[in-house]
Length: 294
Image 1: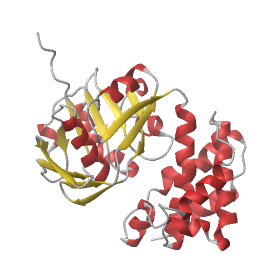
Image 2 (image 1 turned 180 degrees about the vertical axis):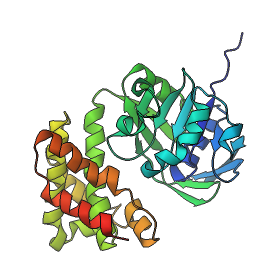
Image 3 (image 1 turned 180 degrees about the horizontal axis):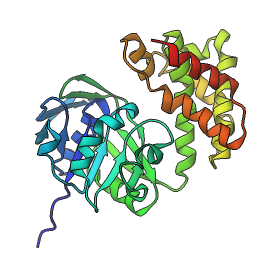
Image 4 (image 1 turned 30 degrees about the horizontal axis):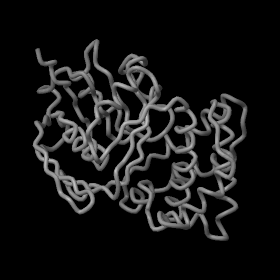
């Protein structure tokens, strides 16, 4: 007998959600798309090749039914807005993968779903949504998860996709905090200065950027993360190189007059730092400035 198909719902069809849905299509899945506006076709561009996928789409949570996996791809501050979807999509067996920024994925969803069924995901994908239903990838991406049974199950969903690879990590905490260190620094400074990544390597900014990174790293170490020698210098060199022209999503959101994700990039650093009695004055200043910046 043929095993029943895995039922998957992708909630949120921005750049990450659209790219992930396409990758699931590569792997032979037919995910349900949960979105405010109907999108039944995803077109992905990768290596100058366009691929189209036809998927069922729900625009009303009342039409949804429980699935095996929910892939939550909304912005972190949109969790409460996604609650009606989770109420309909989740039953006693459903696993939820949280493809969002920050380090507190389980904490931010645990009031809606049992913590043991939440899989935090670190997303490394250079992708953009050109328009609804159209996404472009610069290169294949990776989705990193804890090396636990449900993490490995999530990674296996993408087996066969040339565009996205799921990777189970034994030292997931380190990967999580390394990305937050970069995101809190680039997101905060670039959003406040309205500049692309390369501003962090400018002579006037380099010292402050490095000091901000060191603050975040100190909190990460208290949480069990490790960082390679030269992490700060190598990161600043990277930001001065090929990705220097890239605008962070926070800087783009501020330019567009949209809400920014500073709560899960900077505010969370200060929140966790206080649990450990660690002082983070630079990060706290960036948090305060971002909270009033519009």
